[in-house]
Amino acid sequence: MDLVPAGLPVLANLGGVAEAQQWLRELPGLIDEVRAEFDLRLHPPLAGGSCSWVAPAELSDGTAVIVKIGWPHREMLGEPAALRLWGGNGAVRLIADDPRRHALILAPCVPGVELGAAEGTAEQRLRIGCAVLRRLWSAPPGGDFERLADVSAEWADLAAQRMARLHPGYDPALVAEGIALLRELPATATREVVLHGDFNPGNILSAGDSWLAIDPKPMLGDAAYDPLPLLEQTDDPFSYAFPATHLRERLKILAQELSLPAERMVAWSVARLTETALYEANRNAPAAGAQHLAKAHTFATL
Image (tube, rainbow, N blue to C red; front, side, top):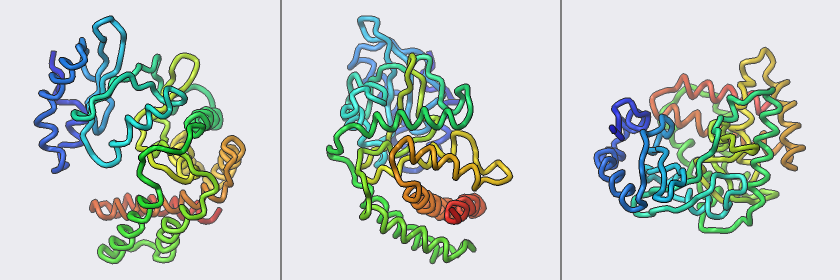
């Protein structure tokens, strides 16, 4: 069995990342080591992880599991601690982990349909996502996680530097507003939780009669940070003739379901989309960044 086939998405995604080349060379050996350590019977890998190798397997007693071996980078280092904290309540259950090899043994999500592909309306999928967030946020906000305030301050500095250095032609007033929000919002948080950090519909899977989150990038901070990817990707509100109308309606749902002020979620949306716009500009993709900034402008008008 070829456990690292040439078409695996993680190879394409990390193929151009200089810092990941050593890990990619070591990956076949890591797989063998993890297989031996946990006495696994491995199956062909899944075409899922963009920064990790993921495959179904069985333990020696026949228990079905998912094996995930991640490329070690800042955003993923808190994943096992967050999964232990949540204990299967709203997130996939962690069975075991190997911190040296950054390997996780996880309970599988069956049938594993992504929320974005689920039946029903966008509003119904939005409410499902909110129910998962409520479960995640019910955990005590402790643990040794990065603080959102520290991360967003770094993003603000980077965005300001990139705007000054790259001159991408973006609206300077809107960029300034987004940068200011990155600095100011964490200090006025009304509720701090252990954040999922990447709560998009592709990271929410069906599991029996419930739904569970996978692939967290956890931080400790303002709950209003988490909902943007769910709001933006449950379906694309910007594909409609009047996106602001759809955003207002969906923000009402989020505010009701999550007991959060809609205006804070709007502010975090402006902040996050501004950061993403300058990130894209720094990747020599100013047009992609301009699309994110146009979305930020729509949110700012709300």
